[in-house]
Length: 148
Image (cartoon, rainbow, N blue to C red):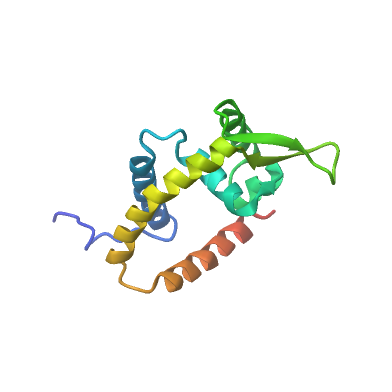
């Protein structure tokens, strides 16, 4: 018997891993030739909405390991996309924010993403907000499962 997607159904962790891979392919397609790559776009997009954040806040919000985020921030600083600024609430830490170049890059990439998101929306079989609500429930379950 030939196994196909109709006969083999990925489980609770494998299915999201498959989705992650497919999302990654779309993201890399959109960002090809851009100033940033996938995980860097995650950080700059989040900062575009949040304004400023500490690395710790970014790590938690984006589900990234602090060491991974640290190297991403360093690359983005070298590329001139983000800058570190003093944290007025804690002299021992810093905040990360977009530079004007980072804002421009994010705006260009967001326009590119709009076309891909429209294609995905056209292929959804349920309401976008319903899907996102379920993904948020799953995210919460994953976060709770990671807590010590």
